[in-house]
Length: 73
Image (cartoon, rainbow, N blue to C red; front, side, top):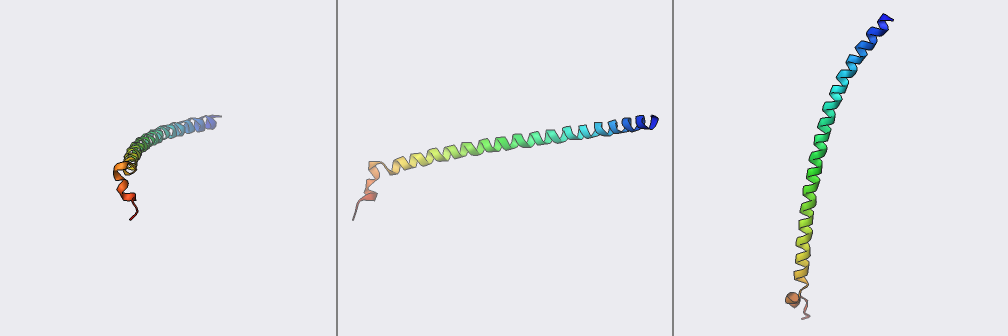
């Protein structure tokens, strides 16, 4: 019984160390996920700006002022 008690105490101490290590890993993982989310947000904003610019350029190309590009020679 005494050896079982000592084993339990030893295992509890080991488990406490593992839990502390797990918390550190969880914090690092959470920070990495936050960084990824920020990067995805930045990319989405840039893509949106590019699409807006493309749409503006398409509108200018298709406007009547540029119709001379489509005249048959």
